Amino acid sequence: EIVMTQSPASLSVSPGERATLSCRASQSVSSNLAWYQQKPGQAPRLLIYGASTRATGIPARFSGSGSATEFTLTISSLQSEDFAVYYCQQYNNWPPGENTFGQGTKLEIK
Amino acid sequence: EVQLVESGGGLVQPGGSLRLSCAASGFTFTDYWMYWVRQAPGKGLEWVSRIYNNGSPTNYADSMKDRVTISRDNAKNTLYLQMNSLRVEDTAVYYCVRGYCTNGICSVFEYWGQGTLVTVSS
Image (cartoon, rainbow over all chains, first blue to last red; front, side, top):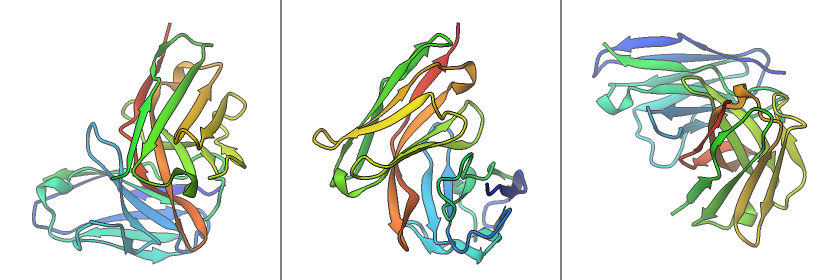
């Protein structure tokens, strides 16, 4: 079973600044890594798949990078609507047994 | 427009059963693998089950294996999750999700319904 670990658990950043979120896999998932954004009371939204490909309609300020076991989601110039919880998900090893998601990083306004 | 509308959630006693439904529209249902993902109150996301576009095979998370059955009616564009022997820890919002295929893998969670709340309590 692959365990996904996100860091930090929470992050305080000022609007207009850059946020960097990390996700680590316990073993290689190649580039089969996705990122999701979830706002309170809403369903998650797909941001990035293939580690670095933005989903349809996702602004260019969201970018993903990494491969194998280390991944990063970067949000440049944070907007007010970007403050949310972010989850990474591996889809290289399926079915995953238990969870396929990281535990999430809460991005808060500083 | 892709729409996934869940129903069937509610309050159930421990040991009880519930069947969730997800009505899909705006796309060719038979082209996609479908999933259930849940989220306990204040907690993270947890994959529950997967079903291929033609109904087989199916997969289940270890936490719910042997207690849930995923199925689909492609004629009705509807996904189901039959849940039995429910436990307090199964309390969660259950999301219906459409899979997206990339590089031969169809396990990116592209579209999500708004979810249906299942509360297991005496």
